[in-house]
Image (cartoon, helix red, strand yellow):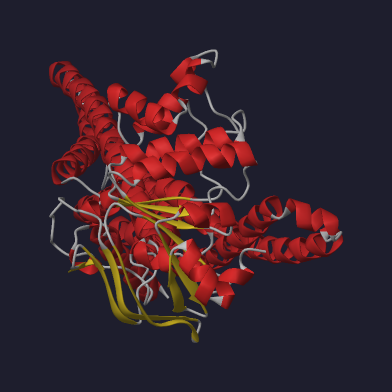
Length: 572
């Protein structure tokens, strides 16, 4: 069991450093400060024994000299302790910021169907709870190694002073470590089970919040409560077993240490009575035995902290290395001078072994307003997801300006293809801060807002651009939220603009305002829009009619009304 635990620790050490979340210079300070702190502490028992020895011989000059050296060493220990704390804080802050940045970057690369394998609640737990536990890992790791080294050094000194006492001390501490590792291994097993149940509960709560209306409508609360109680019951059982092994380790070890202390006192007293040792020797022995116990206690605490970190490190590592067949890889072409030509060349796609697109071919010219129409489930949204690289085609190629989209770098592609959805996501920040996320140039922001026609509305607000937006922009009208989202998209300087049913939830007046903006945008952008509104179809330069993942008709409104029965049915 001990070997298995140690192997697990070695494996997680490799796993942690493979995250590449540390700074070498900061790590050196952390290790060096911990070593100095421990070394200065190890000198103190020796100095204490020398003080007693000189005082016993009435050699007060050397006794007071040793007192002075003891005081300087103690002050050095305090200084090294603060140095170690400073190093710990610097390392923890660096790792925390670095890991959260890596997780955020990973989230941005996840495919649209990532929730099939990993829940949003698990990602949030990883980004906050797991990162918080993981950031202290190097500090506890170095403390663990240095404390074990301290135990061994104290044991060697005791072996030289008294072989019998040194062996008893070494066996006692070794037995404590063995029992501790055994019970901690069992505790960690149940702790992992508890974390899994915690994710289940967090995921359930997240779903309950998202589906509150449906749950209320169908009166699902009793069944959900029963399910929640079953999961929480499993969590409680794992928690009880975890506490059992923790408490057992906490009671057995003090008993062994207390018994060993009594044995050492008896052996030392006998040696003193027989004239084979003096008080100074007893002070030296008990000082280094106490050092061994102190270092053991610190080792146990660090093992506990490391054990908690192990689960978190594994979860972070698993998430950062998460891959599915739909994960996208980007190329090295950083050409940013994109005109906006879009081409699907014999593109096929299937999801969950169900074909949703087969041999789709079309070309959309730059600076045009193209509508994609079709019945629900025809494959319109899949076209957008493929263009946004949320999915990867099973066969065929998607090209932008006659280049495969997989050849572009991530930054170039992301800044040239943008989407505005039916329900735009607005952060709970000020209007200015929402726009700053894309471009913090104030002049550019005002220009974009004027282009889409929302600047005057913003200026009529009490704080203008500094007006806080709450509840996903709930203090703006639906039309204003769409226009703000359009302005944010314009700030990205994307050449290809995708609009997914952006007018479906708007009234006629707001919808007309958005359409006017779209017609303006085609002068400088390629505008592609999924819509079910006949009025917008009529205004489009070109219309693609999609049915069962195929392009079944194409043309302007008048042409399609004459030749496409599917298009006619969409006018109803």
